[in-house]
Image (cartoon, rainbow, N blue to C red; front, side, top):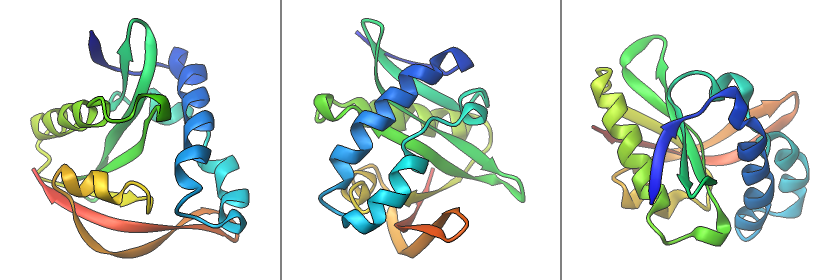
Amino acid sequence: MMQVRPTTKADLAAVDALLARTYPKLLKADYPPSILVTALPIISRAQPALLSCGTYYVVEEHGVVLGAGGWTADKSDPTRAFIRHVVTDDRALRRGIGRRLMAHIFDTARAHGVTRMECWATRTAVPFYAAVGFEKIGLIDVPLADGITFPSVRMMRDL
């Protein structure tokens, strides 16, 4: 049975492996190699601070991490939050893992007073986010490091 639980620092290796294995496979159809060669080493790594923030989660089945993602509050507006570093194992797509994770994210964010969520989606993930209620706002270049940006789509959703 699938379960969603908050991550801890002990989940770093599993989430790191999931991101490193899955992002290159899923993103290659929507991004040219010239973008992926600089972006993947940055975005395909788990973020220790995010894993210990209390609002980042894994979806597990029989002890295997099949998905991860979470949210963080907007420091300037506590009624708004941002979707963070969502991934579903490419070998387990279309099993409801992403939807289960997003339902948990929406429920916990609502419980913290969040009424609006923002997402900077990869081109690949836009159909998924639209299916869970997000609307496209426009294109955005997400800064990853000095001189490195990642073309994304800014999306919003009311809770």
